Length: 112
Image (cartoon, rainbow, N blue to C red; front, side, top):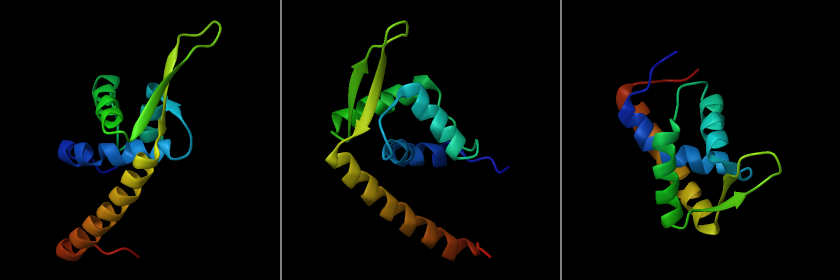
């Protein structure tokens, strides 16, 4: 497996969070677990780095958090995308697509 640099991971963090929240609301631990699983282990977020990102995204209006309490369980904060978050996800997907295309052209990376 190829190891991704920290700067690449930082640059992809918002896109990764928005993408996993596009399906349905998740709590913080589950967001981190889904990103790691869906990336084949290439992307890993500690909760200490994830929660400040979630708070920033909430301040931007991209996500909304809601506390949920279930009997016999710890309360969890579930996050969901807002309409602004869906728009940000679409814009970031287009931006990343253009970026990857440009890097492929410059680097000579070709896919079969």
